[in-house]
Length: 512
Image (cartoon, rainbow, N blue to C red):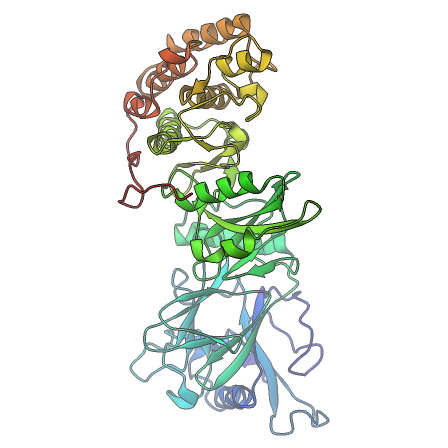
């Protein structure tokens, strides 16, 4: 091969064959490999034209890697060259914010308008001038293919993509015109790739990426598909449920997969949680992404006492972190987060739903591209305005009136104000960046808590003062002295908070 035409930093493949195992040591994070006979013919034609016309489409040379194919290769007797197209964060496309443009170019186009040149002559093999784009998702860095309105892309030989996006797995078949390719991620060190993506985010002007630790831009072999989503192994759960992070293939955005274990004994409990998750439609409450993914006739079919069934629910909005793991933010951001939590609680209360397990681990937090808080886990929720069930929730965060029920010191039911207390204790832990100092609340511990918050109020102003004054009212020992969630939202006065009535513009009845 003529070294002057070789891509920067590239070498001849270790084994000059179409299907060699790429080791990733050359810095490529992924490669687009011709698979069909027509794709390999087109690849050979591009290489031959590069060799014959050294000034032709010089920009595209950088992404093409080829080697001479031995005549001993009986599987490819018609081809002189083999190779692939390189995806490498050190060999950037012409327009980084747009991504890698794939196509055949056009005479009227700038020679740099196409990065991965698939054909030697415009329009051949049904390939458009700018047929499609490979780009990273702004939120998660997942690699996606974007198809235009004019040119379709076929994914894995079965799904036709027009004017849409599709997240690419570790090996994805891509059909462009009459040409078939396989996009494969290499074994490039994931940390190296992640660092390169972080640098590219700075160049693009994108905010810092915010995804859970299990979520990597290099598709994992342990990831699995469910409907139109891809999920990683579970990151949280308990005896009766497991939670996994995943992404929607059509956007690359974060979602959650919650797997509920249903038995004959807990069927009504699970059915209630599913009903709530289907119903909620508020940006600060995590609910079911798509009702149609759940076949209730099958999910809740009768079963014997020794049987169990697994119910999979896709939930959104998903956040990378929970409040328990979130560092204290500036007062204006903290005010927005607190108001959004209370807005989510107000929405539930407005529809007659008591959460009963508000705590820092059940509050999702996202800080980029803008602050967002999401109320999670409706597993203990009930559709009632009062309750005497003191077994729900987490003891550390339970309101005094619930503790009194638990201790047998009272028979008076608790109401929505118990959720306000739990939210207040959660906000205390966030604002003071430490766990509350009790196993369960006592009169003495409560007096100490109020004193600590009051002392800080005297040193605060603006949003911080509003937030601390609101907190004092949330942790009033008497339930009747605590304001409603919506009143607290108004007291804090933070901007950009969705009204509690919102249910995608329509107030609906909870299905039972």
